[in-house]
Length: 213
Image (tube, rainbow, N blue to C red):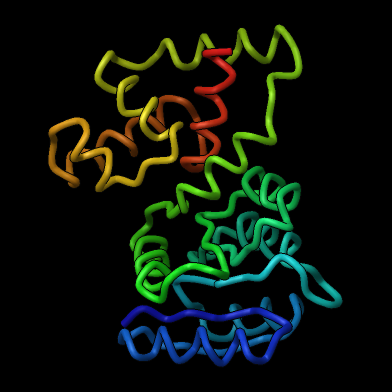
């Protein structure tokens, strides 16, 4: 059974998320109200997923994401975010967050996000992907050149899939548009991330945007 540590300083959010996940058969190993408690709970329970709010007292969510990514402990960070945290979302992408889910999402999406991240996949709400891409613009000619060179490593079909990732589409949506199975899309995405040396879909989408600008 998938185990999760939830970190959020709002008791109502903690209670609601716990109820949703446990109803779906996902075990909530612990709930924390600050980053220090979250890291201690992760060390104690070794869950597959840490569901982390970015704004908490004391040690913040971004610090938790960075430390989990650096520790390579097997616990992957899924960020719980809102549109008011745009810059922090971008920083969390660069820190190695495995996914992002909005606090306004449907319960089904929250469950899907946790399961995807627990399975080693990235989960990015299309709305979050588009929001992050809207924040980022190529800063220099060398940056664009690097992006063009890295994207050139991809085969034509891989570039088609990357374009759809960059538009914020989920694997299921890409499968429908590209007329392939969702399992095949997952294989393509994994191959694309490896070739581009990207940690997650948002980094790949940012690279694609830089290469095409």
